[in-house]
Length: 232
Image 1 (cartoon, rainbow, N blue to C red):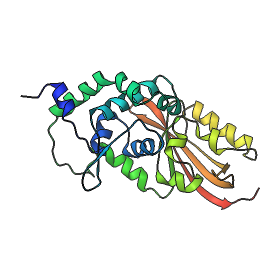
Image 2 (image 1 turned 90 degrees about the horizontal axis):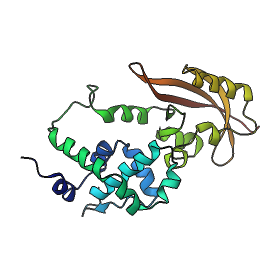
Image 3 (image 1 turned 30 degrees about the vertical axis):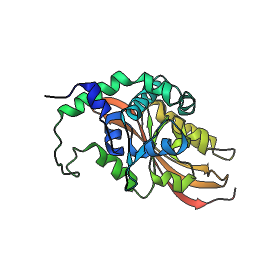
Image 4 (image 1 turned 120 degrees about the horizontal axis):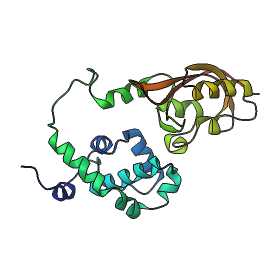
């Protein structure tokens, strides 16, 4: 017989992978928020590995609820851990109960069924990858984005990439071509003069593809490669 949900919550000691699965956020985003904001407070095992508790899960579910309402992560973080934890306890209990009903089995990570493998593949690609929602707001990036433009996920999350990466010398025609394709949910490939976090310009080939599951449009995947250095 399953333990009552409150007891399950009280006994929870989650790895970051388990926390990601229950909250719906990627491990990369959780780590970025942990570095930048104070609403996550993991404990440490004797070997240094992090462990998260039920309150951390409630906080993240509260964060998700507020993100879905259109709030920005900076404004959400300023509410503090205690307030965020009050927003999602019922959702946390539902997630824990559902997870307890699913048997833990060893799976082949490459058979297409494991949810983390897609993110691992994107992380491994030798180019910058940005995943945005239907509004064009950044939800995930791979490490190639940090290498290309200097911004991490915590700095880009919830923003439109162009609002940060484009600048005074970016070609307006290329921007309009990209914007039109996004509005019409069409793939697009353009060459853009973007700007590194340091302020240095660089020329990049940018490809944007609509992200769909069946007939449902979920957002966009953008990939970028640096072409040449520019001193314009």
